[in-house]
Length: 143
Image (spheres, rainbow, N blue to C red):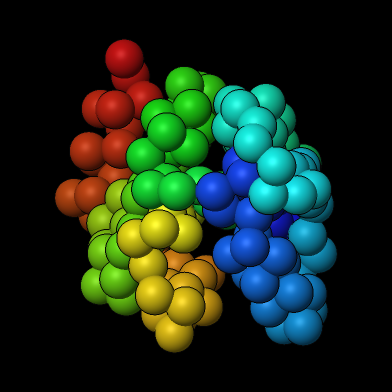
């Protein structure tokens, strides 16, 4: 799978961990930055990553920040993006199975390191259930 990844300074450490984990699992990773923990503005990095997913240059995206909220808001401004903030395995499972999330947003300040990669793996391997959930996504996309 080809995965876009991006963060601001507050998510940089986790971005590096996730990136290495993804590459070790055989995924192709497109890193949209940032490249350090020096203060920066997350839209500068999150928007291009989300656009890569919306334009189908990447299959999915993972964005990271302090809480993950601003990153999800930014990504969700792009048509076709369904960015979900996940904080545990169950939220990652439902983000995919019920919401067909194509961008995962994570908060470095909100998630313990021992849970980080479990959330990522759950989100990557959970299939969308379709059915009644597709009807709801169609309604979201109709606006």
